[in-house]
Structure formats: structure tokens, C-alpha cells
Image (tube, rainbow, N blue to C red; front, side, top):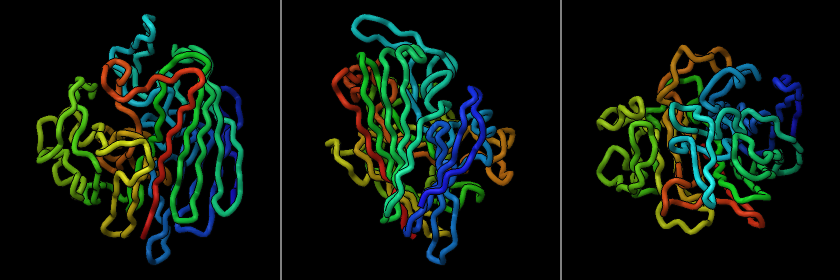
Length: 350
């Protein structure tokens, strides 16, 4: 079942809608075509109680005025581009430096702030198909890119996200979703006691601005080692590098044995609700961010819940940050005639 309802008017005057996807699984979702944003993601525990496991806002105004990219599609290029520039075929493209000296998550007005076309497809596994045409030189990226992102509520209790895009000029492209998860419920506070596993022996070394240095380093025996499940907060503040991330994780982990197929790559489990999330993806990396910069001065979440540091964790499946400026990193160049594809599934059990 799919329920469509008005969710406001965008600054450009476009009508914005929210779509609730429901089926017989333990999961239901509410998604808006403003930024392709996941507003709510309800998961039932074993007692049948629903927990809304993603952060977000009650109204469109919250998404217009708050930072954090809550639940949104991020593009044209997720994460950071150093010095707000890149070079393709000898031509340098200057980008808007929306984070100090660098560009992050698409620039001044990324895909998270765009109104997408939407088509609801009902059935046993209801879907919301979102489309956006990103014009040539939008945010100064070359090429007109046609993007389709499909959210599907699976009958096995998952939210699948399928991305597809093609361009008419050589460009760079790297999408993700920026949902903030707390499996006890977004309103419950810290995720420090939730248990996380990541199938990654290595990560990108990064500088104080969380820009990759070009080196790939081992996580083994460090606070960044989640190759065996452990609580997210066990090693908070245990390493001087944590100060760079405001006391938590904001790192790109590189999956083991990458072959481009959909694989189980991460998991998260809440000890009280008993809800477990497994992340399947065909991408080579995941950016893990523990909402270190959230604070009570930011706009309140749904129901007036205050934002708090470390109240949620993001699993941003992606290629490597700043790949275009680091030879040997995962390739983010998209050519005419090629099709960009990316598949990630967040599957839940109780």
C-alpha cells in the first residue's frame, strides 16, 4: 500500500509530497520527493511495537533550514572534494566551497535540496521511483545527468535503494543516502551501546578536515576496527584522531574482497529493542558517521526531540571520497554511454 499526502511547497514553488510505503513486513517507510528524503522508517520489535529508527523533521521547513542532510539523496558527488576543484581532460572545474575550503555532499544546492519527480508503484513490494535531471554545469559539474532512484519496501523487511544515472558529457558521479539510524528509536539518545560490524580491514587515512591524504591504512587493532562486532561507543575518545571527528567516527571504510556484487557489509544491533539492521551493498566503501556535530542548538527533530551528539549513525555506501583528486582511488568518472548503478539494501530483523 502507498499513501500520498501533501508535505509543503518548495522555495521554487513546487508541490512537495510524502509517500508512505507499507506491506506485510515488519518495516514501513515515509519518503518525500524533496531530496528523496526518508522522513520516517518504522520497524516492529518482537512485541510488535513500532520504532521510528531514522532522524528527521515533522515539516518541510526542517529540511530547508537544518544542516545534516537528514535522510536525503546526496549528489552529484557525495562526501568531500578537496580544494573545491577537480580536473577532467585538462579542464579544471571550480566548485562552491560549502565547507571551509572544500566542497561536500554536492555543493551549495545538492540533490538533497531538489524536488524530484515521483511515481508510486504499488504491490507486494511497493516502490517510489524518483527522477531528477541535473543540468550541465549545475554546481559547475559538466554534463546533463538523468538520475533515477528507486526506494522499494521488500517483503523480507528491507528498504532497498537502487540508483541509476547516465550523462551526455564526461563527468564525475558518486551518490549515497544520508539516513541517520538509531535502532532503539531516533528519540532515545546515544547509539554508543549499539553493536556494529563492518566488513573492512582498511580505511582511508584523512587529515584534520576529513580529506583523504591518499593513503590507505589498516584498522586492525585500532579504535576503527569493527571487523568483530563491538559497541559503537567502546572506543569513543580513545584516539587523538577522534578529536578531528568531534569525538566520534567520520571515516570511510574500504570493504574486503570487493567484486561489485551485492554483499552483506555492515550490521547494527540495538540491545534493548532487539532490532538488527544488515546493510547489503555493491559499492566498495561505506562512510560511517556518528552524528558528532549534532547539538541541541540545531532545529528539533520530529515531535520536538532535541538533536544530540552521537544520537545516530550513518552508513553512506559509496566510492572513495575525493577520488577524482587521488589516482588509484575507486573511479568516480562517468562517461557518455555508460550507466551508473548502485544498489544498497537496509534489511531489518527483530
